[in-house]
Amino acid sequence: MRSEKKSETLEIRVSHSEKSAFAARAAQRGESMSAALRRLIAEDAVPLLANKEAPMWRKFTIAGLPAAITAFVLIAVSLAGAEARTDFKGNFLSMDANQDKIVDRPEMVREMTRRIAKAHVPTACLGTQWEVRWSASPEVLADGHIDFADGNGDGIVTLKEFVAAHERNRANDFILADTDSSGFVTVEELAAAYRVDEAKINAECRAAIGMQGAAEAPEIVEWLDTDRDGRVSLREFVDH
Image (cartoon, rainbow, N blue to C red; front, side):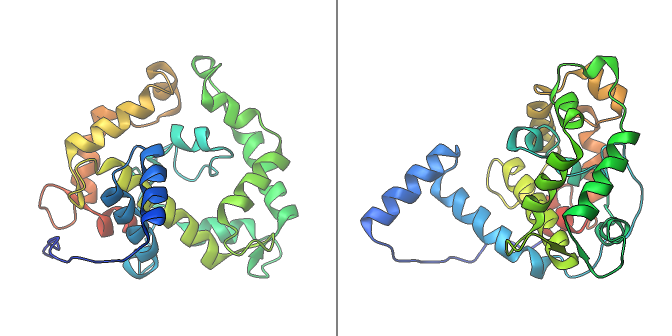
């Protein structure tokens, strides 16, 4: 499969005040207006790009753990999507205790209680964001999960919402890693993104919990790069 070239243009007309406000918001995020628009378009296109369920292949230690409860914890584990083909459907069904095709707060609290009981925080991780993550109560974790995945704000999560939320998060990871806005992530860019994460969770903690880092970037890109062009497209990143 050949990678798509960035040959399309899109023209939009906005007022001067709208443009100024958008530029200011993009600057707050550390983005150019072009990068911000590309991110918004990519996030909106995810449901169309990811048109099949990704099969389970293998799990790294970080894979399958709950989504972040706050933005800074999410950043600390932001590249989980690049480390495993997560079985989103299987994860959802395991939380849906009564099999009614939705996950409500009691079911989410039950699942978070189970995960906290199984979680292990090594000594090397004390004082890090990893400890903060797992020292939260099941109720706090559950509320964070529901807020993360509940697309229509009705307090429950459907499978469609669950998958879409994780795919949007993965697309955002891709855009943050694609620092030159080329539409592809290279080994160098992925390694740089991991180094940002490594500044938040020290090497000793990462080694203790099996979290991947910059050193594994070549291996991860090789695995994600299904068309073997030496780089990772948004489709390849999201589908895996």
